[in-house]
Length: 134
Image (cartoon, rainbow, N blue to C red; front, top):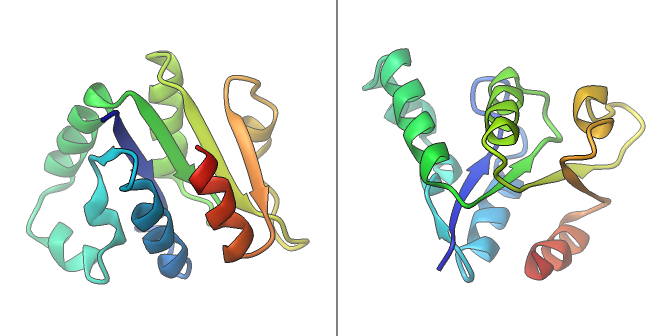
C-alpha cells in the first residue's frame, strides 16, 4: 500500500473540515495515510501539545516517507504551499484538489506549475468521484 501525505489547511482555516474528512475517508481505502490526524475535529488541541519545530519535523518526516501527496487547496494555506514545494523538490507526485468557485482562485504558483496534477470539483459528490480514481 502506497504511503500518502494528505495536505490541507490547519492554521489558515478549518471551514472545509468535512471535505478533508471525506478525502481521508475515501483515500484510506487505497493508501496508507501518513497525516490522517489532519481530519480530526480537534487538530488544534493535538497541536497545542507540540512546538512549531516538532510539527515541522514531524511533517518533514512524513513527506520524506511519502510516495504521493494529495493536497486540498480550496482554503489558501502557506503551510500547504510549503509542503507542495518541498514535495516537488523531492519529485513526489502531487495531486491538487480544489473547489471551483468565483470568489477564490487557485494560486498561480500552483495552477501555473505543470508538475502538479490539478483536479477542480464543484461539490462533494464530484470530489468523491475524483478521489476514487486517484
